[in-house]
Image (cartoon, rainbow over all chains, first blue to last red):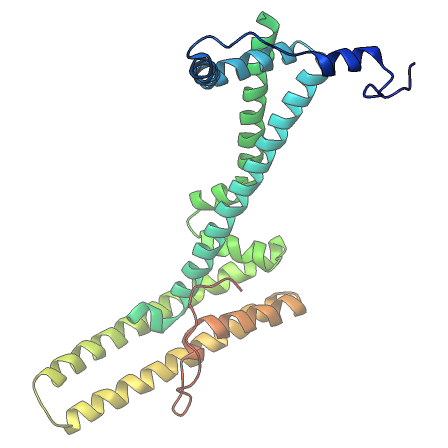
Length: 112
Length: 163
């Protein structure tokens, strides 16, 4: 592999590039047209972002490793949600049952 | 592409199934309690780790205590009603009002005494450590911890908190 830096003064290509002068002028409205194209491309990208994401996901799912990772991730999310929901619900029930026991045995709470 | 769709939907179903299965498995006991007539006693069994024999004894004590407790509560409610009427008809402390106040205070003291006896009986059925924990909890949750004269600075805490 050539280790010589491309900007070396002895390189004929660099020398030619330095001496090269562009004389042709840009067509009228060139800059505005470029910006219009960039804008249009960005809008198109935003419109299809979900579709593009779905397509890339579907393409990935064909690969066994990706498919396994996808299913594992969803299983983990499901288990975490199930655990969190059951913890919340059992804590609520425990609190309600404790209150019910106290209400049953405490005369002051019954007469209030 | 058909295989990809299958995996996409299969993954979502697997996640939903995992969530539902774990939720139903972990709340099975509690849902069973809801169907029972005395879910609070089943909660007590779990909370204070009672054996079946201990639970049966605690349930018997509870069943024996409740009718008497309710009777005393009804009596106290009647006295309180009388007191309310008395208070509405006068603007001075009459002997009748004082008598009702004394009667209500005596009934409250009796109720609290009976309740405390019940708590001690229940705690004795439990394993020693759980019995101690039970006593601490019920004393903190019931009217036994109502502020006494000269204890106005005691912070008011929620009645129905967990032990």
